[in-house]
Image (tube, rainbow, N blue to C red):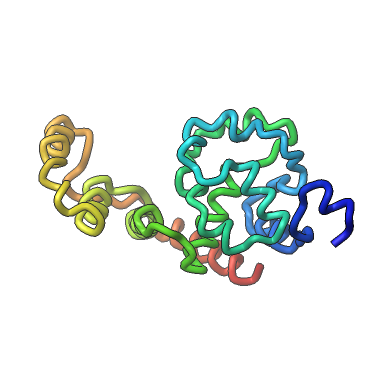
Length: 195
């Protein structure tokens, strides 16, 4: 390592392979390589205080090739997809989309500290693949039975209130032309395997 890098506080060589991998796996054009480390994303994020790494720090870790540390981070799982960071980013980095990519990579590599959010995500995706839409009652029931079974009885009054007001269905409903969505999802999975 050169003396200049040590003086600048850099303790790891830059390894752009992880950054490039994440950029290529992100839908559309992520502009991830354009991050100038300004910190606007973290300053715009309503949940940054609860993240172990702000998005800016996470992108620096990507640039340093810190795969395991990035995929174990809680940052992508806490992202609420509000897109404040995306709107305010001076480099137009698609930060929320990168967070979706990192979630998928963490699930594939089984590198996450707490399984609650990955299980919730997988259950939701499974319902969309089955019904073409979310099914709130089934999602909440599965999630709470798996992770918080003792809290489920306390959720019942709210659930019954939502059902009685027509805000939540008891039985899941499939979308029309589900076969078309299935073809789209199958094609997307094929493309993901080839990339």
